[in-house]
Image (cartoon, rainbow, N blue to C red; front, top):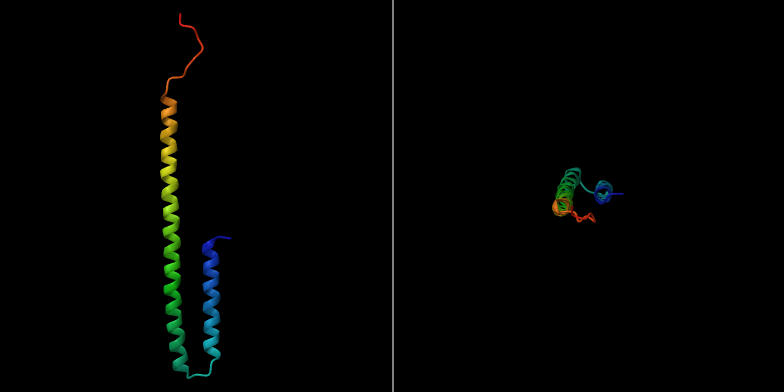
Length: 91
C-alpha cells in the first residue's frame, strides 16, 4: 500500500471521528457548525501540507533517478566508443 493512501486514510478517519464527536457534543447548532467548519479547514491545511511533502519527496527521488540514468547512459556511451582489443595478428 502506498504511503499517500495510508496518510489520506488516516486523515480521513481523524476527520470523520472529530466531526462525529462534535456533532454528538451538546452545543448550539451554530456553534457546532462553526466548529466543524474550523476543523475541516485545519484538516484541509494539514492534508495540503502532507500532499506537498509527498510531491516534494517524489520529485527529489525522480530527479535523483533521472540524473543516475543520464550518468549511466553517458558511461555506456563512452564504453561503446572505446576501441575493442582483438586477438588478431596484424597482416
